[in-house]
Amino acid sequence: MSKKLYIKTWGCQMNVYDSQKMADVLAPLGYAPVDAPEGADLMILNTCHIREKATEKVFSDLGRLRDHKEAKAEQGEKALIAVAGCVAQAEGPVILQRAKYVDMVFGPQTYHRLPEMILSANGGERVVNTDFPVESKFDNLPASTTQGPSAMLSVQEGCDKFCTFCVVPYTRGAEYSRPVQQILDEAKKSVEQGAKEVMLLGQNVNAFHGEGEGGSWDLARLIDALAQINGLARIRYMTSHPSDMNDALIDAHGSIAKLMPFLHLPVQSGSDRILDLMNRKHTAAQYIDIIARVKKQRPDIALSSDFIVGFPGETDEDHAATVEMVKQIGFASCYSFKYSPRPGTPGAVMGGIVPEAVKDTRLHELQAILFAQQSEFNQRSVGKMMQVLFDRKGDKDGQLLGKSPWNQSVYVTAPERLYGEMVDVTIEKAFQNGMAGTIATTETTTKTPSQKKEAA
Ligand code: SAH
Ligand code: SF4
Ligand code: F3S
Image (tube, rainbow, N blue to C red; front, side):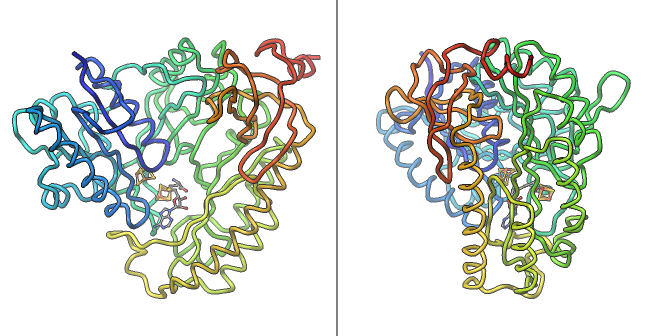
């Protein structure tokens, strides 16, 4: 009989990818994913530690899972509760101490060891595993089960940058790049299973330096090799660091048609003083120069970034510099956050704490501009025809959701058989977070009018 596996995922896309991998590892043991914790035999919280309240959210969820575990026990059955991800890595022993009903706590580099950990937990042991094992989990995880039209593919993990606000170097460990062949094989497999797009993932994806034919490959070379895969139509990557944006990668945006015109390149602040305090290793002018060079290669590129307001020492002038930079560049979409001190990071002990109310005001001001830019960017698409890859089913019946080349969400009333297809859509309406359109043709990938035009 199959066992029920419930996984709840927070945080970045690497966590989403990891959750899929955990499900893949557990499938041969008879675990089948379910959407709710009721009656589950194994409940995993895959957690994120990037901003505060992360731990509290985990504990409040754990309380609910405990009820399910007890309900199961009343029926004479055993259910296991596990905490995985970056909170587990950072606070493993604390979790076990505070929540006696938690059976397993394990960090992001240990997922390939899940079967043995479950065996121990079923034997009554409380498992804690926050090692950074010598063997790579990627060498020991099974091939993906189907991921749908847009497949995530972790190519790099960890970080050696040590930005002073960030926990990632501590929770994910040192930078590691997967070998090229392993990545190409996984991409081919995803395409065989119906994927038309791959999203290359890494905390510092453009620092990629995986071993390939003839030595170490950079991300541009990897993208070029992936672009040779028949049936793969779209390639994306995230998240990048400005100082790893090398010439080859910038050129790739002009020369590799399958590389989508979207770049998520977090800058965090527009003030050189704050960038220095953050240990970002580049200036505002250098960032603007990178953007200009990318735009030269790909004038229509959609730009995206992350911002932190209220980093210790941030003055009104520093904030004004961020606002100025945003106005100068013009972004298609962005994430913006109030600075949140993280235990163990240098930022947490820096002087010049910015009051919460000031952070609120700054965030509000910045977001008003970013949201307006996003709406304007989407508005410019109205009336245009573009290829949309339908990768999700909409909330309403008969509705499909997809992605434009510029990473915009597009809602369309469309028959379900178009799920997984790339279809020309005429954009009718734009909103801040997406667009609505109508099908311009029902022909698929190889024959769409826009591609015919490109070929002509
Ligand atoms: N590797 C990426 C992003 C990692 S975390 C990079 O180098 O930019 C994702 C985003 O969370 C960051 O870009 C940053 O904007 C935000 N973030 C990270 N730590 C934070 C903190 N302590 N407080 C607020 N936001 C934070
Ligand atoms: Fe965190 Fe900086 Fe590394 Fe990004 S580059 S993961 S923000 S330390
Ligand atoms: Fe969060 Fe860890 Fe990702 S802290 S953002 S889940 S790397």
